[in-house]
Length: 124
Image 1 (cartoon, rainbow, N blue to C red):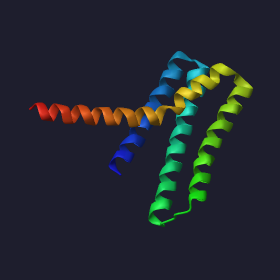
Image 2: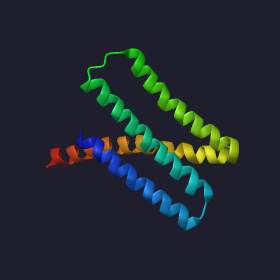
Image 3: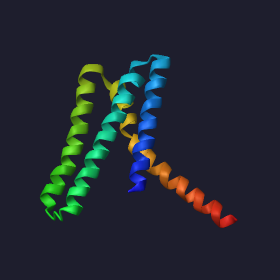
Image 4: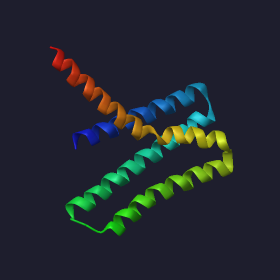
């Protein structure tokens, strides 16, 4: 549970830094695309956490409901990218896709830093 809080905290910091960076360079692809993609990634991760809580704590064993929740998150991302592509084109889709990778990058970095921490402890 502590790791999930850490991921949310790091994802929020990443989103805020992307927003500040987008304002500084005044690039609409970074400002709107990457920042909004990052927010959608955080929203999807929150939805995933709530679905897991529902699945575990209510002992919901329905595979159909779990699959529908899974599809809901991906359909949401698909609609988001389709709307961006329709109004702003491929460059905005690509910048939003970078923002959507926010949570995945934070999960990966959390694992890497834990490995490095354990590795440095073993050397001592």
